[in-house]
Image: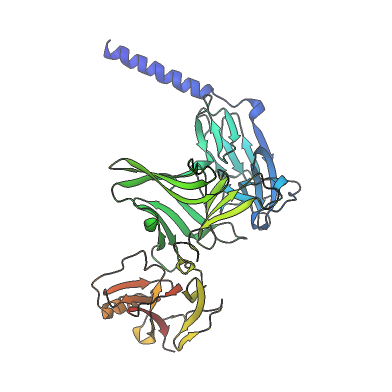
Length: 439
């Protein structure tokens, strides 16, 4: 066959493929436009929100508009059924931080694009699937909302976008959705300061402070699992029955690595009933929790299965940056004191560090706390082989430094751009020096 003949056949095949995709349209009977208007739903939902449910439904998941502040709506999937009379929870969101108003529209047209537009017609969110072969839309019983082609292949799926929640069957992956980001507050649906990130060697949780040049690490999966060789490429939350016992169901992280290629898993929590309807949530407080839903229960259908940073878990609550407010001392998961230049005082939610407003070294000093660590110390190495005087000098020259932490036994130094929760430890060589104004 001549090269010109091969080129012609290739061109013909490409044209036929393009034609088949371009001709694939959504049947008019499957298209829809929903307008955000009318009465709100009657049942209790997460964040005490107002909501309007839309027709797309596959028990126990339903598409809704909801708001926690007036006229600021999020398009979301809720999980839970009316019959159980249990709290319905928001497990996927399209437009966090980009709310729409009354009379906004959700449209699925013959071109296969799903579009959320505000009342004035401005497109706020879309799937970008116009003329790409989409023929149908579904909410699956797994909580995955999909746009599919004529063969059932998913051309878009909600599993490929995350906010603060990971459902069973959903994946974090390198080069794609690789993190969860907390919600700021129950009322304010924008990104909060906490994130759970899939990294090459495992999972890590960070606190992002406006004062810090980079997010601060406060937890990693090193005690649960870590990747010694190669790099983590994807991690999927799964539900697996214990075939030996028969009455246990595990929530498991299945993860894959490359260079070398391998797969592994780690059981994280369990329940005594089918926990396929479960999710992992990075909470407003920065904690990580597993929740599971039992559709066969009439009353309290939700169960908090496991909390990662908890007094009954491997890591206590003192590791949470905000456990003791803006500036408190934590011990055995309890807030025990407010550090002050004059010593420790009783803890309250109003504990604050005195602000240093001047960068001149003569305008501030430090007060010392013994046997105290910062939340970032356990999972970071700090600067090794550093004299304490050099550590202090580094903090003094940095206007945003609020204090430094020094281990005299290992000559390690940590610069802190936010203090938040400090942890009392038994080792008196662990020192904290808190910057304070001289006046």
